[in-house]
Amino acid sequence: MADQTKKRTLFVRQAQFADIDAIVALLKKAYPTMETMVPENLRGPLSRFPQGQFVALYDGAIVGVCLTFLVSEDIALKPHSWSEITGNGFASRHDPDGDVLYGMEVAVDPDARGLKIGQRLYDARKKLVRELKIKGIVFAGRMPGYARRRRRFSSPEAYLEAAGNRQVRDSVLGFQLRNGFKPVRILKNYLPMDKESMGFAALMEWRNPDIANTEQTKGVHSTRSGGRPVRVATVQMKMRAVTSFDGFLSNVAYFAEVASDYHADFVVFPELFTLQLLSAEPKKLTPQEASKP
Image 1 (spheres, rainbow, N blue to C red):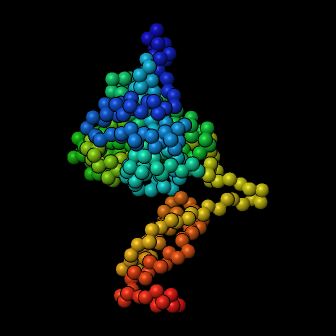
Image 2 (tube, rainbow, N blue to C red; image 1 turned 135 degrees about the horizontal axis):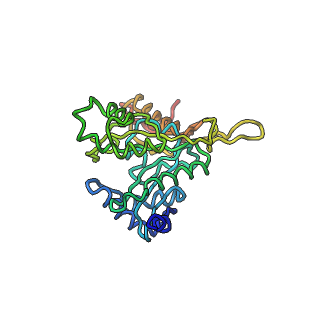
Image 3 (cartoon, rainbow, N blue to C red; image 1 turned 45 degrees about the vertical axis):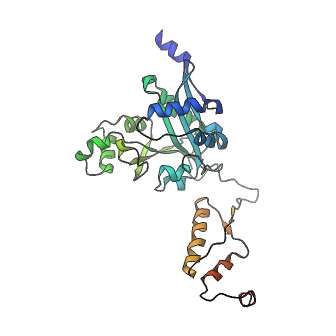
């Protein structure tokens, strides 16, 4: 009878703006030793990608939360920190054409453990991935047992391998591995305030079993001519002084790399963006001198 009651009163639904205060309180309770997200952070993912935010309710109270956004697989699998990939917790790097779901936060009320809340949240993410027909899920998982066992292992990679071989018990890594996630690499300085993991995180990946061909993603569309859309990135740059031509090239390279992360085919700079090179001239030029070819 007790099990039936749990099934009736525990469910997962899409998060709403009205849930923000309860989610903030839950995060503080779940991670009392770390700085957690504030209401302003939560409005980001709720506004940009509402269908990717989930809460679990038990007897009407929020006891679990899962926050996600879409991003390209290339970006998700590169070395990164939590602040970099999430835009400081605002999900500002959400890409509607992203081909993987990135897990930016998950938490369960410590007083409600044992109800398989985490499992339900993970199942909700997998269901969303299959509905969107994207490649899979990527996130960086904590390794809360590493700090107290670090003397037994030569590196966090060795600890991750031991957890995968069941030579050491790590509740978080064990849960993720049982859910079909596979380790990709160790991320250094992913979340420096996570002292239990010593700032390290295990980059984990789950592949959508419905997507047989990894090139078949949500962000690639065919046309009648057999081609594909062309993505153009336009740069709105502020004129800034440079001390050399190399400094100018460094500015250009930065914008080109950002555009590359978003799979742009072309990058368009402002028409007169080379004018900033004049600031590198040792002699102050008059307008007439500056306009000479």
